[in-house]
Image 1 (cartoon, rainbow, N blue to C red):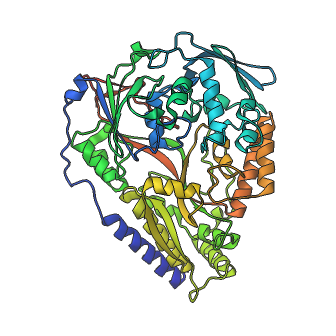
Image 2: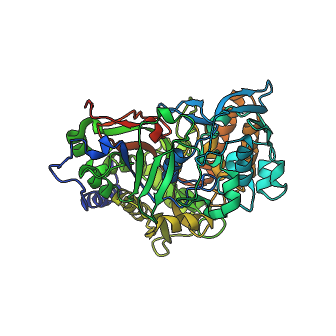
Image 3: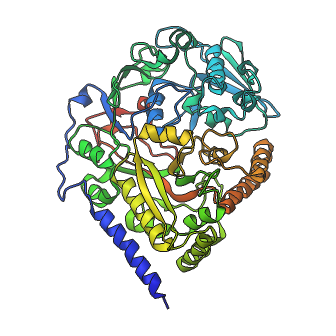
Length: 548
């Protein structure tokens, strides 16, 4: 028998979902779709939409996905990902790994040039990496170099940057010393924070080196123009090492945070590629656009963070109560149209890794809610004294707002908690997270490489991404062991135990796992779905010979 209160709660939440889902529809009943290739095809001009305006195009400072889209076109690392998401040589023509797996030696291409025609040398790589870990740079990406000898000590101010375990033994040889065997290290090198930067330009212009007309890069394209919160225009780099393989002449990125607006621009023929579309329009878009709608698994997790150093979220009972009160299956099926999967852990399943599920995953909704109310009361809250807190989130499209409205409705119905939505401009939200201003905040992480450590490092003490200031000695021990061991089985066990510790501490609130979704014009060729959702413009081209 279903308790009456449960029936009422379900009705209220579903009502909130229905109202939220019907409050806006971006696509009309019949779509006016631009189907014929425009003049941009003949001009080999690709137009791409991104979700946010990049805070910076400096490879060593950016940690945002929209910025990485652009930086991937402007710069190139030692290795790169091909259209299928597989590692291939890039600036480095080859590399060798020592028998103990602690030394990696990269041979750079001797013909590689910067866009100002100066040679790219191993010293540029060393300079870039030292710059990232130097505390004076204040890069949030310093953790990416954690496998490299002395990186963490340098980032913590205990050693000078020149003690980093990377050196240029000659103009075209980079030797890297690791602290432990790190099989995924080559994947890390595809992250923009480890791309080389031109030392001669950075030293001359300082922070202004990334401005149009000043920036010197080594990717398939160069920066022509970048308007504040506006379009970013790139042109083909004639000095790129593989320029003959690049078929596009121009690429323009349009920052559009509202996914409904992005879809509208696509339908109007203003862009060729979008980074998303409104979830509620998927059936109509699929019917009328067919294969132009692209879905693929994606290595990303949406979660909520909580500042655990001060009330109210220094209470593990309260953190767990909020975690248990969410009906993820209702959220992903009713509101997210099964585009995303319910998340119960930090790390999505990938590459054979199976994350450990918390015990409560097997409970019924009634059991979870009952336990959530017990913990809520244990934390000192009740109908007479409800939790009142703001949930901070960045400006985005209606998809995010509807999800958040549904979640706050669940917390209200299942606990009596009064969670208010507090919207912030994207850059403000990023800065406030970095400064740990928020008590409760929206967060998401896209894996930098297909390994659990790219997620687990987020909650280490000292990580710039540990916005909630999680601190657990056993977790630190497990991560340190997993990072150091060369035994794959022991490493997996350490990761699973570490995740179990995160789950037990309710260090964050998992919500759902991402799936990439794009709208792609049929004349855009070379696009392949991959788990990293990285699609370099150098691998794409435009053609009037299309197949639907």
